[in-house]
Length: 65
Image 1: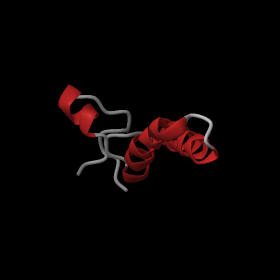
Image 2: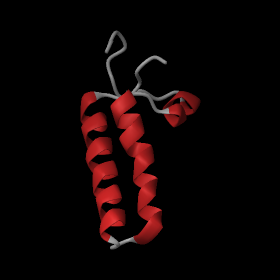
Image 3: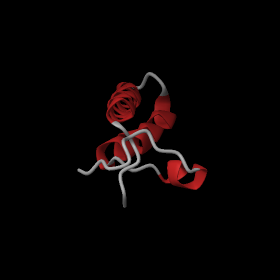
Image 4: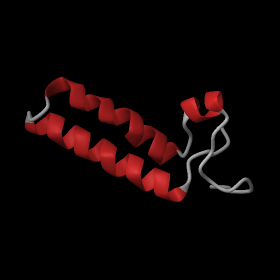
């Protein structure tokens, strides 16, 4: 898996994922908050399957882990 998620994108995904999971754990938004696992995982792995399908990338072409 070649990284296709850049630094700012990565930080925003991780923060959004943690916020959604936190809200789900607190009972504020219910079970649908667990969708936060998706942006959290894509941020941590630096790879987004949807970006691959759409031909997008938010990181430099020669970026490595």
